[in-house]
Length: 113
Image (cartoon, rainbow, N blue to C red; front, side, top):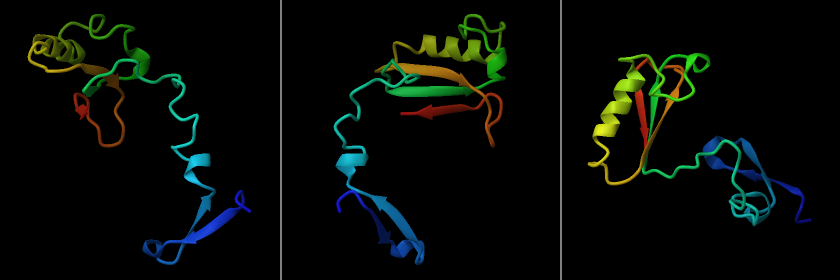
């Protein structure tokens, strides 16, 4: 039957088998309800670039960075630098604070297009 699970072998997995369920239109990214609703917690601001500044711990961040961050802190410096470059940037840019993960250091800036 069409609803049944199928086992599909993949040669690049050195003989291991992967489990495939049905068709993409029924369970994948092309099913009708995909992208029909906004997900909670998703970004509402469309920007060409998104910067993430590794700084401190989320529990200690002010509600409105960089304005409420300590004077001369990294978020204030980044906010001021981006504000001064606003006219030179062709499109929108958004930035957020993030906590350090494995391999990150305080002050790292991650940039995503």
